[in-house]
Image (cartoon, rainbow, N blue to C red; front, top):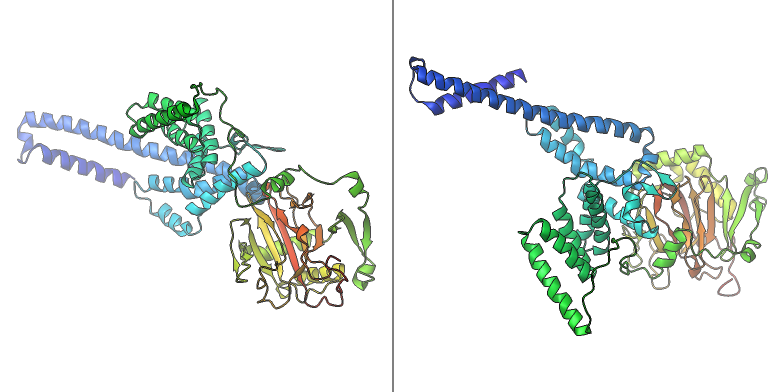
Length: 539
């Protein structure tokens, strides 16, 4: 630093002296020497400004380091639990994609080879724009499914959980902008309104009120609320009267509103004083017909369990029809639903087995795929948001043991089953309503496997989930909560081989926590004598 300062001082002296005169022998003139006195004063001032700028930059970097010291101390103490909170996961994506880049730009203002080389080495592992956008959309998905307003997320007030994971004005603005850029004006309104609310409450922010009102007013217009769009645009123009787009929008909105009022022969009424909140506008419909029923079950609403049905549910010991491996230690089996019959097995996996399965899966985790019904090829899909890995019995004795246990319990061969699939659902992780079996209109779904259709599903829960993450069946109103070490089992096909369409199910978004599951899809081939055909189509 001292050598660098000397260089700067020398450069400034050379520049100032050369600019004052091209003649030599300056010292022969007191007047000219007097000029040098003032030149030196300017140099000192310039040096002070440089030092101030360096100190300011260093203070900003120190502030960052101190904040991240505290943050990483908390996050590294229990990474999975920390990332289980959706706001922490979103802010991690945002920090690494956006804020660390800003810090990089700050440090790059002066030589910083060590930091830049370290930054460059790690950048390949950083989340990108798509990751940050995905995390933002995950928060919106949770907001919709669990009917949470933006205030709840912003203040860390999730159901049953209170934390210091807060969203700032700028965070809320970025959330709204993500939705806006995706033409999702419904969520853009909710998050821009929250940003405005926090800014009006005195919270400091980089983003200006003008920018927030600009996005908010246009989004409200897109939601069809002209009176409120006009009121918000007027607020914008009052702050910045030279804002060209706002002025044009205001005139257009007013003409449009008065035209509508004239056509309906109505008078203008003042805008409601009620702030925009969850429920002010209706969420647009999407591709999923049972969206409302599915999300209600995820919230614990609309369950069709009653006393009559509960009286038909029992618990028992399951020895796999006198299977020698289960005679001395039979499985505890509980009925979860009567028809279709869904059972839960307790103590299916030990903590040690769960740990080994997760250890084997973590290096292989990749974006979960679904089988294209037309081609049979695995591909990613927006309705399945998780990461998964496939484990073979030869990978470790634990996998072979788990496969054998599934066969012993169900009485079905796993020789023709798919590999053990391990999935981890993080922030907003979900799998929307789907069938595990292939329907008649997709005959080639499992053709490549050559093992027939998926006759049954065996699903292991490898973690407890603090909030959300249930397995729900919208057709008959059942919700099964994850319980670590347990497993659930059901048949996807009747004995006739026909699909049981009641088994359409979904994995609800994880609200708080990290959900780990492993599942075995058991196929028809090899079950001919283990599960013989029935006499009717629905046996």
